[in-house]
Image (tube, rainbow, N blue to C red; front, side, top):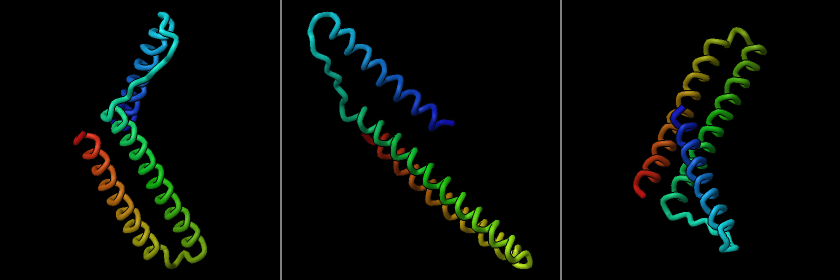
Length: 111
């Protein structure tokens, strides 16, 4: 939920910047310029990276779970071992995801 909140804040800031630029252009300057400083670009990059990380982790866990279900359907007697392997694989994927999200968070905060 926090990721969606961060994305919402970033989009709100971008919308406000665009609205200010449009108001300035309408006032008579004739050109629209949106100035994004390094911190804003850092936030956008961090949010995009975090989103891609979560999408990749969800796809990986979904793939592992789907393959485990197929394997258990083929060999029900090996279900216990397959389930154990599924849990270990999912935990490793979640661990890598957590470390990646922390790295993105640190990159954004350090700006």
